[in-house]
Every structure is written in C-alpha cells, then in structure tokens.
Length: 134
Image (cartoon, rainbow, N blue to C red; front, side, top):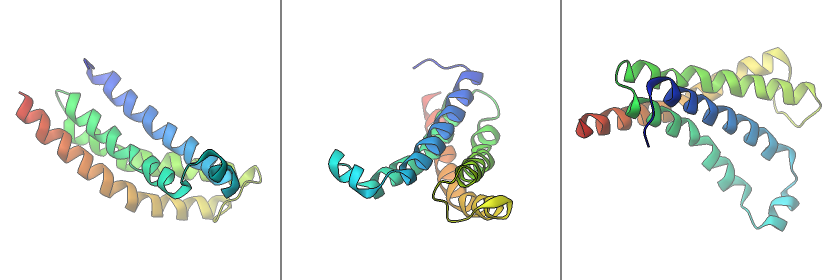
C-alpha cells in the first residue's frame, strides 16, 4: 500500500470514526439480532475497540516525519469521538450508561484510558517496523 502522509492520518481518523459509529450501533441492537446473525456481540465490540490500534499503526508506519506525535494523536481523537457518539446516542434516546454532558465527560475519561493503551502499542509497533523497513 502506498500512502502519503495526509492520507495515512485521514485513513486512521476514518477507522476511528468507523469504530465509534459501529460501536454505538452494536449497543442499539438486541442480543437476539446477534444470535440470529451468528455473531458474538462481545467479540465484535472487542474487535471494534482494536481499530484505534490499527489507526495509530498505519499512521506511524507510513509517515516520514512526526510518526510518534501523529500516531499518538489518536489517544485524544478516539475518546473525543467516542464521547460525542455516546452523547448523541443518549440524546436521541438510545441505551447509554452515562447520559448528558457529565456522562460524555466521564465516558471520555474511560475511553482515554482504553484508547491510550492501544494507541501507544500501535504507534510503537508502527514506528519500530517502519525503522526496519528503511
């Protein structure tokens, strides 16, 4: 894959947005829907939460400059998008554990911890593999 600097970061942002949208949709559907489709809901959510790892990896692997900084930028983007998605889901009447602005702030904090671990690992792996490539 031949990605330039901007397109690799944009692809990462799109992966994070895809994760947020699909994770919020996964919460909306009942367990029966997953049973009928033959999909394990919890496994699907775990796979969705690994997308920030992929976003950070792609960004830090394909960039020539500022690999670490832009890879780690997903540690803030992921919880920001997730908090906005959870806030909008709650405001539209969806099933959300934490509603309102205070709930979005709390969800940002929780998501920040989860996303930071994945983003740090993805950035480190992408950076190390890109150094081997060159």
